[in-house]
Amino acid sequence: MRVIITEHAKKRLKDCRQSQITISDIVLAAKQIPGNIPTATRFRGFISKSGRVFDLVAKDIENGRLVITIIGK
Image (cartoon, rainbow, N blue to C red; front, top):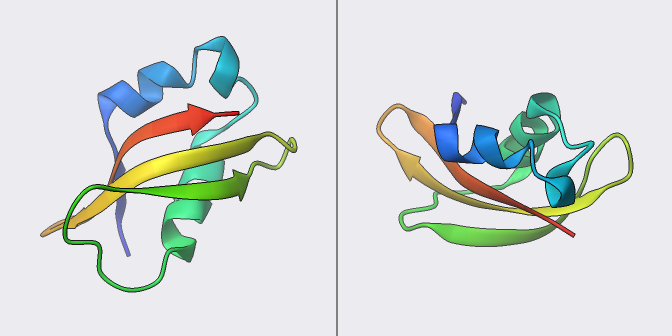
């Protein structure tokens, strides 16, 4: 499955709350979500390799799974 990360989500990775969360953490988390996501939905409780807990908002589109934003804890 192709994972597409929006520019907004990439920009949020530079914020303090999302520090230590990498693109590979996001891709892995998005691929772990089973089934089809027809509308933007928040998924909670992912853990980055560095141990940072985060949520992500994603939805499925024609080209793959679109990650709209990242919320660090």
